[in-house]
Length: 241
Image 1 (cartoon, rainbow, N blue to C red):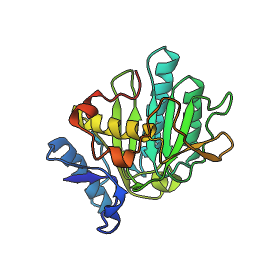
Image 2 (image 1 turned 90 degrees about the vertical axis):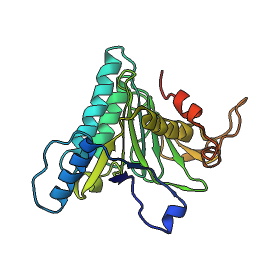
Image 3 (image 1 turned 135 degrees about the horizontal axis):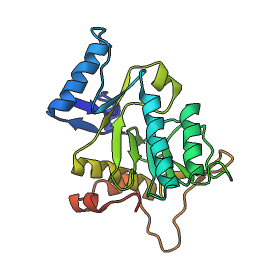
């Protein structure tokens, strides 16, 4: 079976960046089969091992992951959240991210389009950074990373953090468990964060400023660099210590 982050269109696939998992893993296959039974109305959903689905439980599960990072930070453990989506407007998840920031969780958000969260606000979101990436290709993949004290949990899928995705659509996120594939997701996120050619940084008031090359820093364009990335590059990439 194939699980993807969207875009099965032969025209837009030429300039959208999406990712997919092609697998024969029986556990994932069982989850997918159960989900299709739900979609077609043949059964009620059971417990999935590798999927998070909407409209049943996606919002609550993501908030649980966010809260776990907040608990780790409060306990003095390493924590961190990186989320890459097209849009962020769901108030419940925004409030959860604010609370995690207040507990000291470093949060990096890569939001290409609508973002209703305000980063860098004193006492509220000082530990949250938001960038939007607009370059040669349209960044379309959705990736969720939770540090979990050095044992990262990574998901990809079709769902943005929006009311329509959580409550009004049939959506899914799939967990990536294979160590190298997980590192590939981490490297995609790291390259997005590192980009200083296509990125716009959201300010506290909601405006954006184009990211500048810092002194001593080399220009970095993700849409050029991803052609050259090697397996060694992928394996050594980290997001948080």
